[in-house]
Length: 107
Image (cartoon, rainbow, N blue to C red):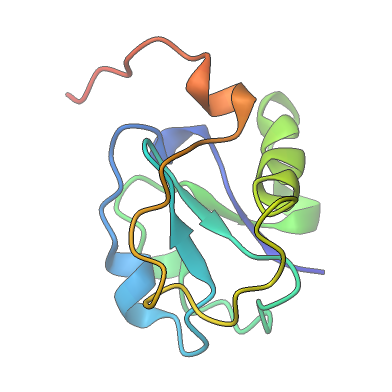
């Protein structure tokens, strides 16, 4: 099991979760952050610090956000397991689910 970052993160990328993650498994795409499913240790430290409540335990992702589980998993298909987000910096891509979204209003 793992944690998942969902749609509320798109075009926000607050990064409070990145600072809280003890294993550096939250990677930055162009429009949102992604949790690496193989590197996440399920500690849950990221969830309460997210200001837009975009982080869910895998089994608790709302029905209308379920596709973000696949987005978090498949974002890493061509990256593998880099072993830490800090050394990667922003990755110049997003999962197609995210890339195809119109700009999200930040109110």
